[in-house]
Amino acid sequence: MSFIAVQTDAVASVGSGSAIRHRDLFVATGIPQGIRMDIKINGPWRRREIDQYLQDVRIPVRIACIGGDGFPRVVSVWFRYADGAFYCASHKDSSLVRLLRDYGRVGFEVSTNEPPYYGVRGQGVAELSGEGGAETLRQLIENYLGRSNEGLAEWLLSRSHDEVLIRIEVCRFFSWDYRKRMQAIA
Image 1 (cartoon, helix red, strand yellow):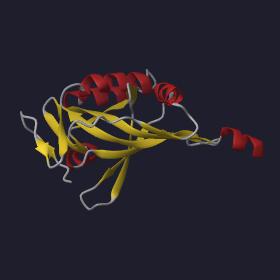
Image 2 (image 1 turned 45 degrees about the vertical axis):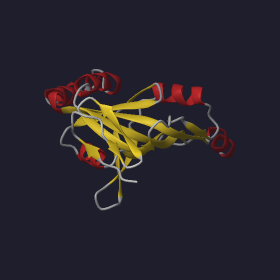
Image 3 (image 1 turned 30 degrees about the horizontal axis):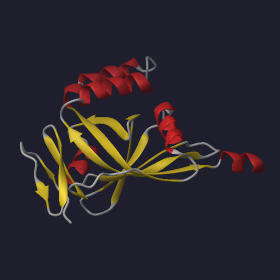
């Protein structure tokens, strides 16, 4: 099955996979047409707990993409989570956007860096859009920086017209939570 990203004005079908129309950019998913992606969940947390964690946490998501050489790349970006999808913004010329244009299937992780360890990882399909990137960036700056680093916020916003909206539709979640186990040892 082939996977490509196509900039066009018409929806294209790719092999037995389908292309997702997202304004001016289509990302081939490799998901057969007519198949709905239900989110598969493994681990101790239920969907409600996963959704709540992802809506409340202020930790960047680590996104794993496949590079042109076939090796994975991991990129950390700010995100907003809603309705089973991550919403991120990145500059149109960033490595992340270039990688996602070539191959939209990703892995991701949102987890604590300090013990006790817990979090969520999974897989999804990224869609890119030239529309909505600037507004998403403004929301992310407010969420992650507030007024704590106005210099960085100003610099990011000065380039906001070149931001791309990245929407990652989740197809699989895996949660882990070692808080009880690690507290018992301490």
